Image (tube, rainbow, N blue to C red; front, side):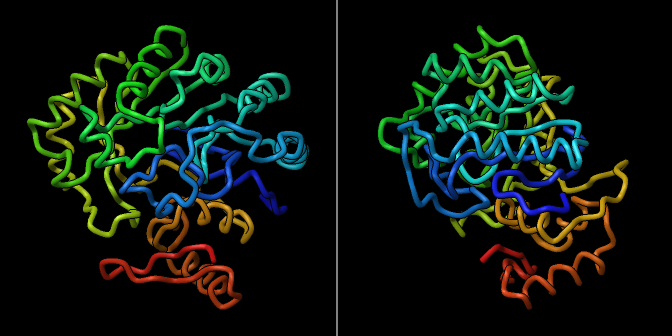
Length: 309
């Protein structure tokens, strides 16, 4: 995107979604959970009450403008700074996409509000939905996700199962593995049983490849992820990778890069891979943004990561 947007970011290349335009409806770190592994840091506004967090008419106006000046993407995805289903009218984005484009829509949600029939009624409008399910009981749910008051594991599971019965589109489940917390085979077997009770079309195994909210969180080794993926069945695969093989290089404006980093802090290596660009070229752009006071650079485990100020 060559123009600055407040609610849109990208498009960025994705192995699953191609060029994906992000739509962000929630103020930064407003969420129903405070996941220990979240790449955006700790949740500063932990809530379970839905509301009109940003003006939907402004979001749709940005989409309209983007559609006129660019309009090129494989998917339009609700994701970003917090839990998108907290917005009372998140379904309006999917309605707009269907009425104004031929682009597929995607909802990335932690699933905590799917027990609400109103949330499910809007979520089914998306062409693809990804939910989270990384625990096997209330204790593991609390340890991993530190949910807001009123959010619990049983409601999460009830909601995701109810949604599966109502939703005819592509449903995937992300299982986030934290080394030493839910990575033991005995626990993964319990998670697999719970996940398969939701009957997803696809299961994505992920781990902490970006700096997590809790500095004690460690990524599970790739070989371990590959081994435990087999416990989930043939529709499971490891997605914890920044390799973007097969993608053309994308030119990226400073505005688009800032929009992405605001929601996905990353290293130069990761960002270069996101856009399939040479690392020196990406590094020069990042250092220019640091010098301009728009980004700050922080060392994590011996590697420089970039964050929005």
